[in-house]
Image (cartoon, rainbow, N blue to C red; front, side, top):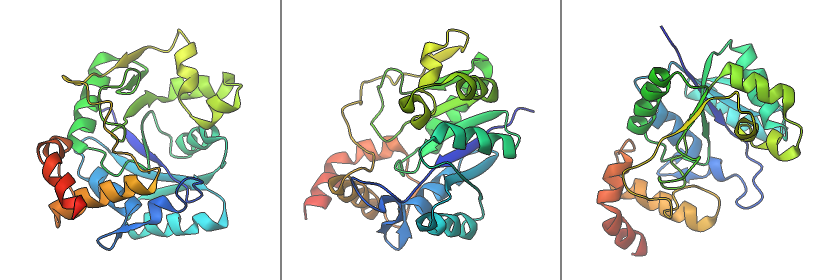
Length: 231
């Protein structure tokens, strides 16, 4: 039976919005909300929070422990190495990459893509090769073979920082892109700036106490959420 683990890339040291994943919405940190949403997936077999060895990321480890998910501490700047070492430690064959600044990550979309990934027998699948989903619903799925190739041959700082960038230059890594029916790529649902936090907070406060709403439900209520956030 094919299994897949989700590695959440997380660190507290963000220049644009410091401690962004530790900010709280209705009493829960952004990272806790993301973990809770990912736990609703029917196809993710394991969740691992991969952070750095820096002291200020001890809080991230405490959140992982509190929420009963695995964790790994590795290289801060070479995130590719962090993923590789994490995958080696947990003996992972297939990996779902989610970044911690995407608390609106959708279990239904994730499960659908995981299903297609396994039936398509590719090395890498993403909905970001050509964006048609809101920024913040980013999903990348790949096998250890592709990760191993990147770890061996990636040279640039950019490739090492962004994990999957090497995949695009290696013709031996089979890739497919998952497209939405309509282009929603101009929508911004990720967390990098204060205004992003205000929007994401408004989404969760609007649907409170439910924190597991789908991205389609958010779209249906988008205008009302906007009015709610303007109050």
